[in-house]
Image (cartoon, rainbow, N blue to C red; front, side, top):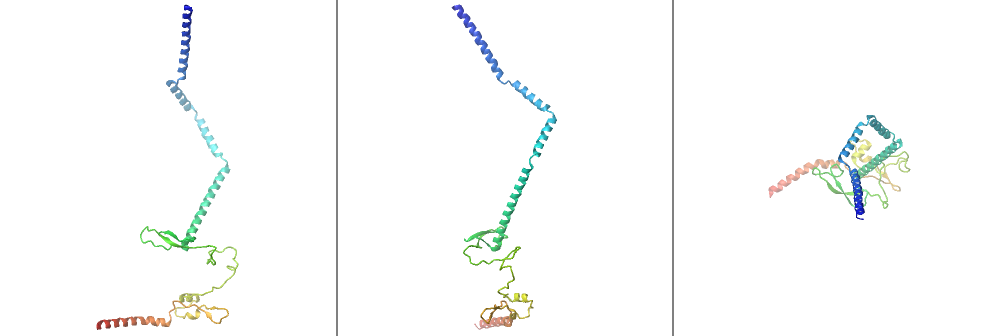
Amino acid sequence: MGLLGCIGRWVGREYVGIFLHEEEQQRQQRRPQPQQQLQQQQQQQQQQQREPAQQQLDRMAGAKRSCLQQPVEQHQQQQQQQQQQQQQQQQQQQQQQQQGSAGASAGGKQQREALTKLRRKGMKGYRPRRSGEKKRKSIRGALVGPDLAVLNLALVKKGPADIPGLTGGQKPRRLGPKRANKIRALFNLSSETDVRPYVVRRQIEGKKKAKAPRIQRLVSETRGNKAAAAPAAAAAAAADKKKTAART
């Protein structure tokens, strides 16, 4: 038993040593060696450099073809979307301009509450005192609501069809001019002629008399005499003042 036991031990050691040696070899093979890595990289670079120029050209041509082979419908849809966006932007700008011009012409906004608007140089109804000055000033409201009974409007642009009762026929004005110079311009009169006979009179139903406006800025004879006598009256008043001062 002693000899057999020694032989068994020796054989077991040999087998264990062989097994360990094989495991170490496998581990070394698994580990990447730096020299092998460098060689592999060099080989890959050489292969890339050896790639013919024709293959590169073919690749570029294929890419261009793929770009050119895009469907035409997509391109048209993109153009239509861009045009729609541009039209929407233009409409928004026009609406903003119209709102701004309406507010500037009316001097207010379509709101019921009292508002203050920031005014700067160039705006209507504001004169800056200093360069670059801005002020917030109150504005009146251009109101349009259901509680209004009458709206005074003006036709800015006439459409293709007439509005019955408004643009369907000619209607004379209810009142004529009131200022003397405007009456002269209406009847093409000279500055020497008397304007009073040319006043537009308005007949009233059921009455014999007609109504006529009082002429404004009318230079009559009495007014001319007063204007001529004004310097003499001023001189006489000054002389009286001097006399009273000398007496005291």
